[in-house]
Length: 90
Image 1: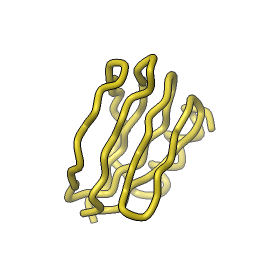
Image 2: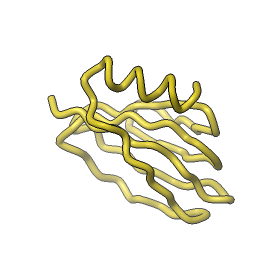
Image 3: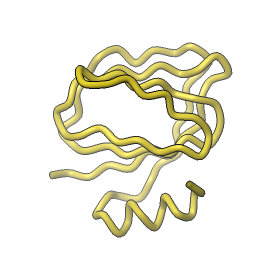
Image 4: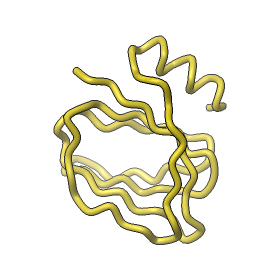
């Protein structure tokens, strides 16, 4: 998925404007929840997202989402990660 395709998709689906984020190599964002749905697009590097139901490794050009109030952990890959994150309050 390209950045343009991602931006169009999140706008169509009612998400806020995506915000660029970065995580350093190996950075862990320990298990937490959000009061909003989250959709992300990895621009470079990779991020592992772990929920109680699944583990997904998102690489450049790949998108993933986490539903509202879903416990999840985010782990940046060995080269870090640069990604876009869009929120949707439900």
